[in-house]
Length: 406
Image (cartoon, rainbow, N blue to C red):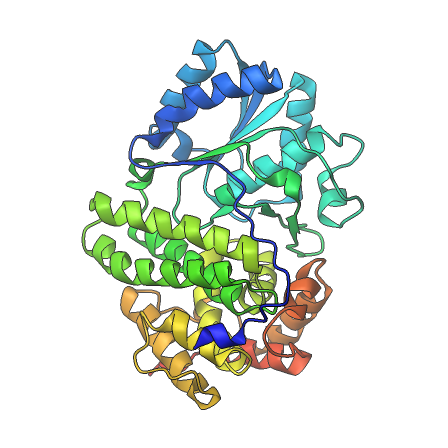
């Protein structure tokens, strides 16, 4: 029983912070949110952060633009955010916000636009700094401008937590930040806005949510809430992801995958993350074209093989929806790793690191980035096993080709 691994005398902080409007049609709640924001925070000017296309193609922008105009709120739109956004995007958007005297931020998109929006919101209230200062921890922000998150993918969970990520191109560092001031003022999870996700996007973002759950539940600081949320996340993804792959228009499946993603985001808000994210950030820091969720899916089986030793009962519990007959014994680690990789392959994510252009000669550099990137040392320190250089190197090596490749 995983409950036996919980120290009931250790005080845990259970975080349930952001008000999320959830369900088909939830985007229409933006009018109420803006009314409240204007009344409570006296906001009259907003910068909207987005990518180039999805905020319009989903129909979200038509609703949000009308609500802004109906509430007499002036706005500008920064629409240049790309996957794996950089500090350059953040500074460019912040300078635009500063010139406009923006008082709040709306992020529309997946993790990249919303994390960029969080970062801009932080700099609006700390204008003496820039994005590199923020992501190299030159200061600890206590306040940020109000953030509204309009989520367009079911993977990130950022709409429900205090985290943000950005890449520093010149160093290839991809640090993560976490501050209470980055909790959104309000968020919207509307599955109808996600029906245009491609099959690959649908798969990769859902596997991102699974990784959030696995790491949060098995970290050294995991709470019972993190573990319970993680189990529900994995169970829900295991049930509904195959359905959405068969029928992308299955709105019930889209709804519950969105729900799973939110639970995963809340799970790692309470249990944090460890090896998979600590090792993936250097990969997409080196190759920004690597989709984050795919990078995580590539690494997860090898991470499970090593990390299982530290929390076997919890791993057996949370993985039970996708791996049968786990008893919570340390000698099951290889079995669990192979079974999870087989499940990922069957869903359609068969790539390993070699398929994405990495080779053995890259390994030492990737390991160096893992240990030198700001913030990743914290993630490594809360892994359920001792995350030595040898362990990290072995995970990367074994992820080059995997366990189930012919």
